[in-house]
Image (cartoon, rainbow, N blue to C red; front, side):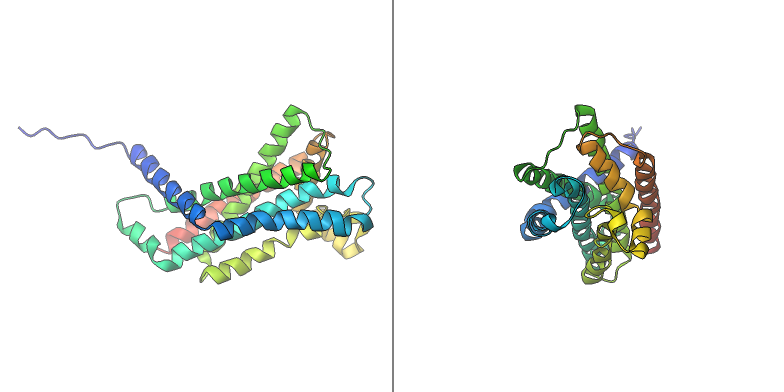
Length: 260
């Protein structure tokens, strides 16, 4: 009589496959040091540029470094998402996805791998930007709970923007196209409250900045880091982040499956 060995649970295999694909994406990031350094250094350069070149001419009612740091933190996520979109597009057009689909694994785990690797890269970039900001005079007076809330909001924003980048990478015709599409995302913080008060803009741009999803996210993050509390914009910030995440996550999954 032959004894059949029970098959491992599907959840166990899925977790194993996804973990392996996450490791692949992280190792890939470590090999692309030039790309990672560029994504890390550009926000730092922009921080120094805005504070020391433009800061003296921009009136915000206080030290400009305190005003601009939250915007630079969000801009860091934009640069990180650009790298993610290019990596996903490279996989989609390079043939490796077809190989994954031919194997008995959960091929969508490769998207999760890119997201986790992006979150790790952004964590390093964000920590570096905030560290440099402290060195040049950033006066954060947040309590421990406000720091926790600020980190949570940053993480939620990075997660949402990363899935947008993944969706772009899945549908783009190649890495260059993916880079071009995500470059447009980088313009959103400039027409918001990230760098200047919206009321200082012309009326048309002020209206755009008022309804730009980056504005409530920036205002909430600024209030938390400066110890002023989340403020009235907190609910809008969380709703925007969650809404973008849900739509982008579903879009990425649908587009990926349509490519099968």
